[in-house]
Image (cartoon, rainbow, N blue to C red; front, side, top):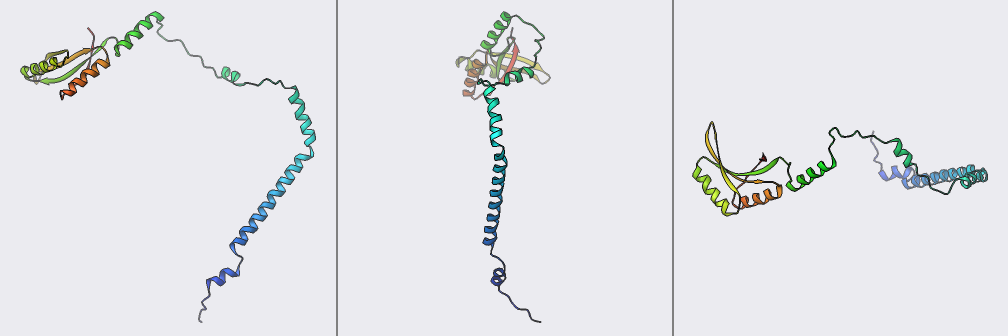
Length: 186
C-alpha cells in the first residue's frame, strides 16, 4: 500500500486555530471574574447598612489619640545586664582612657622598629649613621644565639602608632622594610 502525503496545513486547519482558543479562554475567564465580583459585592452588600452602623459606633467611642503599643512590647522584651565584674571608679577610667588615646597603644607597651640585622658590627654602625642623619632615634643592639652574634639596628621607641608610621615611611625611603616590635615600657 502506498501512503499519501498530506500537507501539514491541511492538518492544522482541520482543528480550531490557536488564537480562537486564546480568545475563548479570555472570555470565559473574564465572565468568571465578573460573577465573582457580582456575588462578592452582592453578598457583602446585603448587610452593608448593618455593618456600617456597627463599625461607626465603636469608632465614635474610640479616643482620637493614636495607640502606641511598642512601649508595652519593649518593656516585655527588656533584658537586664549584669554589672561589670571589676568595678573601677569613673576618675580612674577617665585617666586611663585619656592615656590610652594619647599613646595609641596599651599603657605598658611601646613600639620599636627593627630596621635591619647584621653579623658585622661595622655594617650595623654604617646604617645607624645613615638613619641618624635622617633624623631618627637609632641604636644598635647586639644579641647572641646558637648561630653567633647579631647586631640589630633599632629605631624608636615610639609611644603611639602615628609616630611609628612616620618612621616606617622614612625607612621605606631608604629601601628598608622594618619589623614592628612591641616591648614593655621601662
